Structures are given as structure tokens and as C-alpha cells.
Image 1 (tube, rainbow, N blue to C red):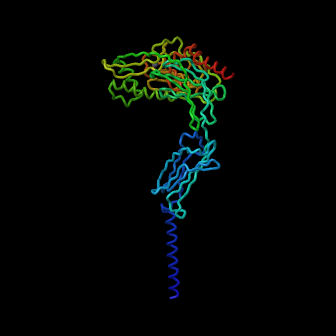
Image 2 (image 1 turned 90 degrees about the vertical axis):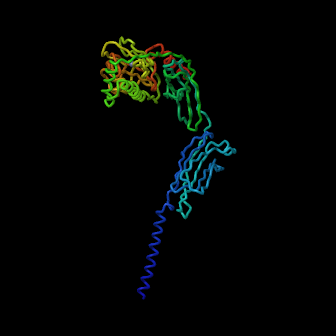
Image 3 (image 1 turned 180 degrees about the vertical axis):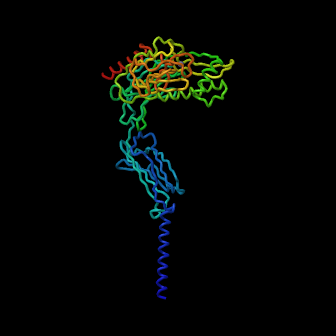
Length: 455
Ligand SMILES: [Zn+2]
């Protein structure tokens, strides 16, 4: 009996131990006792203009039970928002506004704290708690912004310059906003706080306006319109009747070479594929290669008028809007984004300015295609080359031969397709071949701006 009594006590203790360990294990692993505190996402240092709300997000897997957002000015505090949820929430987005009660008047620095508690039973049914704090610096001052000088005019399809001063302790973004959605970016110029940019008016956009925009981290914005005189320009419209010799020759060859999987298309579908789909891809590659703008300080921008092909005759103009017909039916259209120049077959072409070769490869309708970066967002492009004399990454000097003319890509006769680009926009090459335009639109603007800055 004694033995039995002892062993039954042991048995009871054993069962109790097992239950205890089991329930501890249950508590430790059960979802309702999870031990992960809520995550609170909010910027640690916030510049605040007191107008825009402050955003924060609180998340918790087992659900949020409550939160409280408190603003302190060093002496007093005010609760901006607080809630207790009867149904635990997985995600809560906060939009915190500055109180309109006169709280913290004249204070420049505040502390914002957000505390949150989840619906877990852990921590003796209290739940897991999280607190996040951030420092708010009040900044209600707009960035300083002034246009120092700009070109007098901009022509449709052409380029203009602007030099401006912009300053803010916490500048976030600086750009030129246009009426057609494109943003141009400036390069630091001459002395700290000054910037230069070239802007372009695309041929296919009817009206143009541009403003410099400066925005600080607190969301204060300054905006200044650039007062250009607008010079309209008509670009040529032409209708081209497609010939079978062309469709069965050059177009069929391009398909066979660059898109053999399309060889079953009809001759007209092949043309549409080359003129529309292939062209779009080729122009996207050019846009990508010509969109980089320097961000380190420049003191000068010197540029010689372009003269890429000796004794080159103009055989097609920039900006031509071409409509194609087959059997007197309209079938497709295109815009010619460069100037076609022809001299002898396989004539050497030169870069008239220093630069870096950023593109030297086959590019669909452009054939063997070279693009050179000349700085300040300015690029020159050479299409239909028969051979390359440079490769990507090469540094070229003014006067260097870079390639020979040819018929690669969508070219009938041997010629050079010469293009100029400013921050990805195709622009009139004629301006960049014109010493008077360069002086009036860029060099004089720079010289006069430097005098103003030095005063
Ligand atoms: Zn061309």
C-alpha cells in the first residue's frame, strides 16, 4: 500500500507537470498568445510645413487593439488621434494634422510619439506594445528661387536655356515643369546655389510653357515661370506612296534580318511592323540613352557648331510628318527626328564636339547607330552607319572621325541621319549647326548670368 500511495502521488505530480508544460507550450505557441509587437511606420525626422498631414501606418498580425498619437512641444502635449477597436484591426493608416488650437505657437521642434497595443493575450492579457517617436522640425518658409537669365525665345522643335538661383536648407527637388508633362532637370552652375538647364519644345506639342519648381522636404513649393518668347514653326507634311519594290526590298530585308519571326506577315503588315513597332522600340532605346543630365557643378558650356559630314547635302529635313499610302489608302505615318545628309558613299563623319560615346550598336530602323553625350543633357546621334570607328565608353574629341555613312536600317540611299537630343527630346539639328543661334541662346545667356552672379 505504501508503495502504491507513493507511486500514485508521483503519478499525480507527473500528470500535473505534463499539463503545466503542455499549457505553457500551448501559450507559447498559440496565435492568441503571439509575442510580436505591432510595427509602426513613420519617418524618424520629419520636416513639417504644418499644412500637409503626417502619415503613419500601424500593422499587426494578431490585430491592433488601440493606438495613441501624441504631440509634445517640450512643455505641453496634445493627443492628435487615439482609438480603441472592439474588432482588432490588421492595418491602420494615420493622417495626423497639426492642432488648430494655438498649441505649440512659435515652437520650431516637436516630438511625435505613436504607441500601439495589439490584441494578443500575451503579457498577462495586456498584449504587445510598441512605441515609435519622431522629431518634427517646423519649416513654413518656401525655397528661395529667382531666374537670373534665360534665352529670349524658344522655337517649336527647338531649345532654350535658363539660369536660376535656388536655395533651401532642406531642398528636396528642383526641376523645370512644362505644359506638356515633361520635366527637365538642372545642373549646378558656376557658384553654389546656381543652376543651368536647357529645355526643349517638342515638334509634336502645340503650346509651350515652362516654370522652375523648387520643393523642400517640408513640402513648401516655389515656382517661377520662364519668360520665353514663343516662335511657332510649321513642319512639313508629306504623303509617300509605298512601292512594291521598296516593300519587297528594304522592308522584307529588315524583317528577315531583325525580326525573322515576322516573315509570315503580309508585305503591308511588315511595313507597319517596321514603321511602327520597331520604330517605337528603337526610339525608346534612344530616349534611355539620351536622358542622363550631369549633377556635378559646371563652370562653362562651350560648343562648336556641328558639321558632321563634309559637303553633306540635306536630303530630308527634321520634323517632317510623313503619311504613307498603299493603293491610295492611308496605311501608316511617322515623324522624322533628324536631318538627313548625304555626300559620297561611305563618307567619314565627324563629331564637332568633345563627348563620350554612350551608344554604338545596331538599333533597328536607325541601323548602326552612334550616340555621343556632350554634357548638360545634350546628345548627338548618327544613324545608318556602314562601319564604326568608336565603341561605347570611348571619349571623343572635337574633329574625331567616328563612323562612315551607309544604308543600314531603314535607309534607301547612302546617307547620314543626324539627330540632336536634349534630355531625351529630339530637337532641331539646325540650331546646333548655327553659330549665331548658339551664341544668342546659350553663350550670351551664360556670360550675362555670370556678370549678374558676380555683382
Ligand atoms: Zn533620317
